[in-house]
Image 1 (cartoon, rainbow, N blue to C red):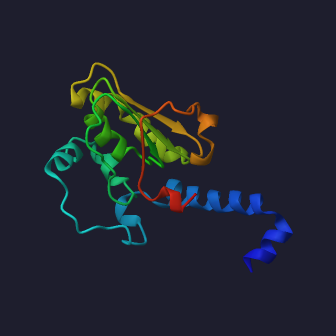
Image 2: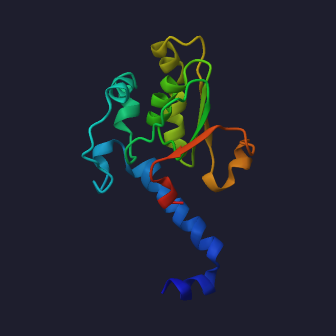
Length: 169
């Protein structure tokens, strides 16, 4: 049982092992969205037209590597700093980057090196696509339980979003 295993090896070791398994799946096993082994996160809700338009301005590779569950996109984000926990390849960050505008900022945190690499690769491309002088997105590789380790200080963001990664952490 899990309890017997926990008493033998230690809870933290088991948690690290499980986290490594999740990182392996999302970083190395999955190559495109269609590789997901479930559709449990799908929604039949209609996407608002402004969000649909914003999604249309996200790079194809970023869209293809989206493994999330919907999009958390509150209204009135202009000029704010948004933190996306479990940002993956950055799809939601790039949608939110359009909503916060050039004066706002979006910070994405993910534990998978491969996903962060894709997100980083498209920062300039998206800034150009959105007509921004410079990117308003920042991507950090790290654990959402340890935001201080990646330089995110308490009270340094206005809005925090996440779409399912809390279930994996």
